[in-house]
Amino acid sequence: MSTHALTALSPLDGRYAGKVEPLRPIFSEYGLMHRRVQVEIEWLLALAAEGGIVELPPFSGAQVDQLRAIANDFGVAEGERVKAIEATTNHDVKAIEYFIKERIGADPALAQAKEFVHFACTSEDINNLSYALMLRDAREGVLLPMFDRIIARLRELAHANAGLPMLSRTHGQTASPSTLGKELANVVARLERQRKQLAAVEIPGKINGAVGNYNAHAITYPELDWRAFSQRFVESLGLDYNAYTTQIEPHDGVAEYCDAVRRANIILVDLARDIWGYISLGYFKQALKAGEVGSSTMPHKVNPIDFENAEGNFGLANALLGHFAEKLPISRWQRDLTDSTVLRALGTAFGHTLVALESLQKGLGKLTVNAERIAGDLDASWEVLAEAVQTVMRRYGLPEPYEQLKALTRGQGITRESMRAFIEGLALPAEAKQRLLELTPGGYVGLAEGLAREA
Image (cartoon, rainbow, N blue to C red; front, side, top):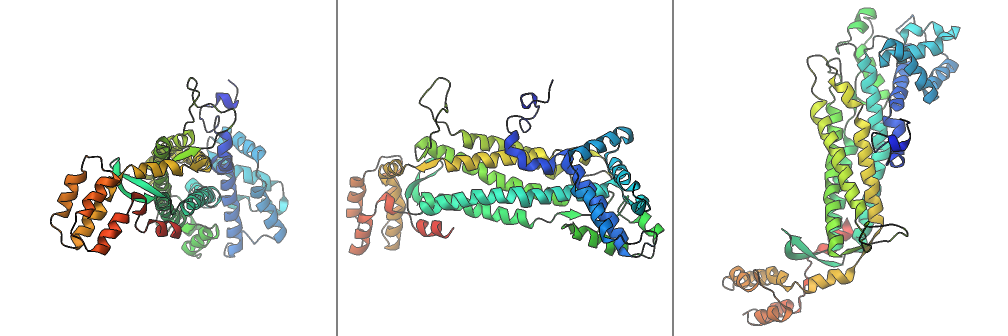
């Protein structure tokens, strides 16, 4: 079949292709190739600049620019050339090495440097740094900005509705009121915490040879401080240096990164389900779009599809992110190849995360608050003042306050009149009694408004 979007095996390359466009230059095979070339070129430049390798004198400024252009100008056509070389080598990283040698071999001024391309490196020296750069670029360029947009929209809603009283529900039953803004502020606080943790996750890298001991480096140039040189190189890429590895960087940082995204996604699943429920209760209305259909047979329906789509895609993403976090730090002895095929699926997990974030943002943008419906539920739930009344009774030493309110309210319909009659019969100081008599469910929100505005 053709490679038309309709024939794509994955919805990320078909139905959702447009939504994941920002991730294509990062997590595609082209993105991996591009960063491999970048790492190989920067390693060659660093070796020459070090000064202790007499056979590789420093490059001139023009030569540095020429070499960096191989990485900077790497496009799909260059990627196809790498694939053509790989068809012979049957080794993807070796194909990158040969591609670079091919590019510099025709220039007599650079040809002498050919055998220092991939010098003393194992494939994983290049791979771990390339994947680390991919994760860094995805975090800084895509994930954090998307989380920031979600947080900003939730904060906007929280502040706008900070003082709007809303019936709480614990175990699905009526409970002490909150405000709509405070409930959204809770999510803002949770997300900001996870955002900080994701931003702070170290992204480690190594370039220390076949089994992590600089064997080839030390036997060839024993006078060089390879540990210090490697650390400088890794950090020059904007990554964190890992001094202790086997053939592979152990991927603990990748696991931490995936866990951080997974935790943020879980919070957003919680949000999507809650918003879905509030839409069902009528607390939110959704903006209508001309031409949209909610059901193939029931014309009245306006379904919360954005929140359902978000929940489903967060679930798919987290299934993979959880697998990455559990599998990638495990490798037999000094290296096995199981991480290689798993790492290639990173883009799938982050693709579903991005689809979910886009859907959630779209859904949040379509919400309007139905204050009348929210107020109606509050006014029909006077039993939620039982907590207030029994707590004030405790202060003034009235007998069995909890038990009295339990007998009055548990499983029974309570009205404004029945609650006021109960309060009138209490032996409370006049000021305390009057405060309770003036209390309504909508006025019993504690410090919720202030908390919401501070979020």
